[in-house]
Amino acid sequence: MNELIIFSAQPFGWLLEPLSHDFMRRALMVSALVGAVCGLLSCYMTLKGWALMGDAVSHAVMPGVVVAYALGLPFSIGAFVFGVGSVALIGFVKQKSRVKEDTVIGLVFTGFFALGLVLVSKIKSNIDLMHILFGSPLGISGSDVRQTLIISGLVVTILIVFRRDLMLYCFDATHARSIGINTGVLHYMLLSLLSLAAVAGLQTVGIILVVAMLITPGATAYLLTDRFDRMNLLAIASSSMSSVIGVYLSYWWDIETGGSIVLVQTIIFLLAFLFAPRYGVLKTQVSINS
Image (cartoon, rainbow, N blue to C red; front, side, top):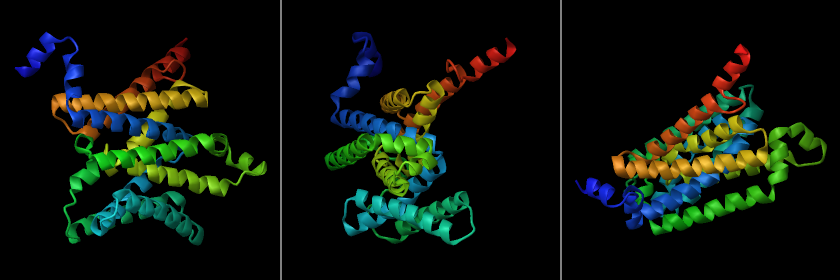
């Protein structure tokens, strides 16, 4: 009944009413910010073909979150340490064995994720497993907001400063090495940024779904343009918009926020997949028939 009064009294009541709550304003701000950061980074992930690596890092941070909570440290510190540690372990196992990289990635991230589940069950704490797995932007605290702002600012700053080198590394690592760029440093820098973005995404969509925020916006933009600058803008716009729409949907329909955000991102990707002006399925089909 109250919703009907809001909609009838104000044409934009559905848009303005949630903004009267502090928790909604924080959720919208943080979700849009994390969406923009993950969208920007997802362009590099898409070009590099690191979807599985993003999945690995996002799951591997779980034991770090649990250990950080148990020691009374900011969860971002533990998550980042374990995220970078998982990357180092993947590289070590790959170099020292004949096992292929995708297999090593699968082994490491499932092992770390299982370790996190065991630690949650054994360490006495007030850790909410559902909060870690699926995020909770509607209940984000002021300290978590500040943490997310710092992490997001650091990721964006590094991406801007090393933009040209990272772009060349993702497009053609061999050429980047041939002109004297230290691709090893760029490799671990990008993986560290991936870990930081995963930590930031924990607040909005949780461990399980953060990989979607690191992959879907870049994949969507990749279907819409051939220019990297434009790809960045489209990925940021689609990811931020998905985050805002997802938070609104979760408020009005009383549904899980992280799942709502990722579902909106997936719908936008499907629309691009079907209707992209140049690479959409329908456009390609019409060209073949003609």
